[in-house]
Image (cartoon, rainbow, N blue to C red; front, side, top):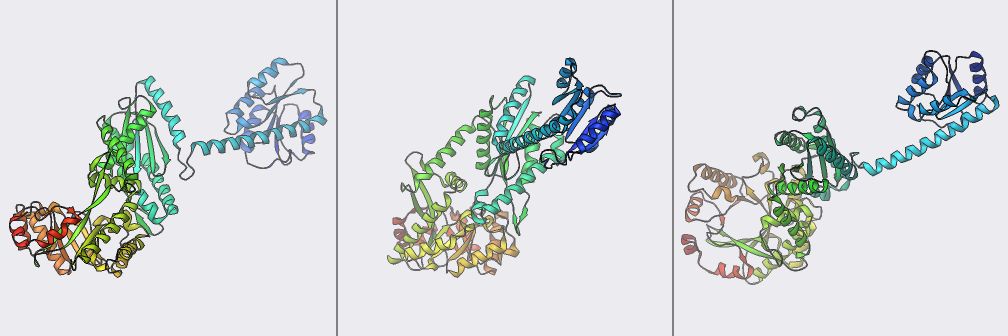
Length: 595
């Protein structure tokens, strides 16, 4: 039925059905004179045909008609998608109580007794139309309220409330039918970084794109359909932020679930184009299966959440099933996150510095600042355990600024103590690098400390600069224009293109320790390191070999004419007050024998 204002019955369409021609004529004249458009039918079959074609606003049906009775027509109209709300007035004999009861039984809205009081017919029809309009308005308001309560306004997906109710029903049904159900908790890796650097409007667009990709994957991936029974249903919900959940009922086995999960990982990981940016996000997916991993919706959701955090700690961009042993890891993650929030205010962080030794000059020429955390509750926490938590929780920006400021202040103290041309290297996370406030943060640290810009070097990984290359080259040039040096960290483990390497305004390549470990015993690793050093020399870049621990590694690097070494062979990371002492000891013996 077309949505339109009835204005107390004006312009409304009325369908009248009766096998009495005189009655039809009188009814048409009476209603037409009141600005109502009247359709007439002489039997039930014709009335039903007219209703399906025109979808009138109100229907008047005589009870006794050929072909289909008024009761039968009324029942058929109620089966129509909009027919359940159409006012239907049954015309019955004045004393026919049975017909009146049957009229209500078959779905009639009201009845009109014969003989007809013609002056009252138009008033009765207008009254019913007005009531129908009010009812439909209330119904639409209820539907809007229900939609707001059960669906996410940004993506249109079912929300947490909807998921909770669906999961409860699924568990009840699965318990009765002895079936498995599965939930997949999806969190988008590093979404907060994009949201913070490119803005919330961009983040909203990205979330809509991702939700569409998940839906498309759930509906159209052939191998997902092959992994599920015909009776398996999949509901995709958005829990809020960058978190989604998928409910799969009547799942067959873990093998089938793995197929679905891997398809989701592949689909979500495909890059999308938004506002001239190519963005690639990866998911971490946690999986919990009923009844194995929980008998209630609360247990299932909690354990899927635990599995999702485990997927993050295992490198992200993948899925993990829940296991009881994961609870310990999840609790530690939550403990770390909780303690991190107060660690800066409580002065729990410190910096150690690992010397970088120039082999040609036979001297320490600088240090790399390395963050350490000694928590009163957790004890000494490894960077590998808390840095990823700091990135996920957003604490990394405040923490990174503290590291930059502290390292610059310490480097100025060394300079004032007589260390000349002594450089300090500070690691920047990819999240920090994307922030619009990065340049101001670096400038503020230099200005407040008084450290000359050439004595500061920032280290970035390949993965941090390979997305949105043109924009990143501009950002790197801005850092170089400040006088600050740039090192490309963990070189060889990422995916940078050599054609882009010469475009990046960097000063130093740092060869990842994974290549150095077997450099004196593995010919392939030795060849890689030699090639990197030759490439750096061609591009007029410095080279730092990380993780040098043995004399054999040192000899090989010397043979390859490596510029600088860093590693336990000379010194582990030490507190700031030990650096001057290290710079004063003779290095020839140290480099020959180790410390």
